[in-house]
Image (cartoon, rainbow, N blue to C red):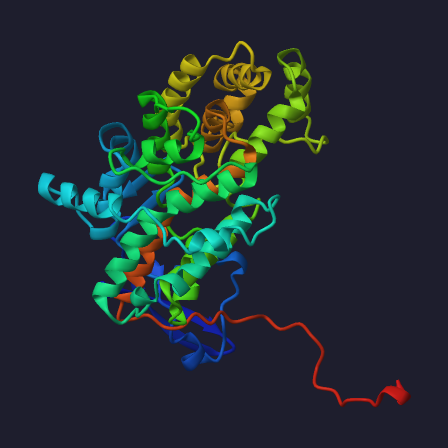
Length: 431
């Protein structure tokens, strides 16, 4: 925690309370209200915690107004263009970019932990065949504590390290198995001769009956999707992981909680909502109709995949992913896919129409990731599991940071109580 060099004075009901102000490396100052209740007997009110810093962190910084996303100080566009997912994982987990030797060691450790316990196959088969892959992932990841109970002691730094590598390594296998189970195909074991993204694609799309070769363009696009979704500061699912962790819960339970939160359509389902919108539009000749509806403030229709809650001018992740989207669509072709033709035309309009430009409705990362995953052949039910796979390293990094923080306390938000005053119980015959 930095030194406090300034303070704010809160005045109310004839009393004054001085509150320390902390200055971050970059970003707005933070007023420290930890002793507010003890000193003044009042709470603050902040639904959604949108004006509250719940922790201090050195991992990720976002400036939505300027369109900036930094991981350990490195701009996301540089990482997406010049780096690859496992190198970014190392950066998030350990704070610095690795040397060549460190990266080789890290990649080997991850690669050689991608298999899951064989008995977990039976756990998968306990789910209904039509279960949503996210439901399966929540259950299986939570159950990892039963299969890997030798890495659940959060007070042991080595067990924390083992759990971190296991989660990062096994999540693609679990996600691919959830997909294979949902479509009735046999599980495909991971291969140590493939990189992280190619291995995931192979586990999803190969079958025993024929050889499947992973196209390097698709593998690179998949790697970029992973990289661009790796961490995003204190969002809902990350905050869920931190809150679960604050109770001392084991790492597998904490990450399962994060997956459950991510499943919410307001969080991890944005790219799915984008594809559903494209399907609703249906064909290129209907785009003008939907553009007019989007411009009509009285029409409930909204364009999904455009603009962003955090980024007000541009999504720094979208520029890089657009390049991959163009490469994938060129490789896979859009001539026979009406949905992808709609996406390309809608993108062109959004980038040139004055209304979109004025309203800052730029194509965001969800727009491009959705059309890439659709072009690759993934069903929409797999979009959020892939997001969870990518975000696991961010959750784990935040979890590790919190466990090592001497200021960590169990999360206990307060409330503004608006219910009934104390009243006496009335026997049922007298009500």
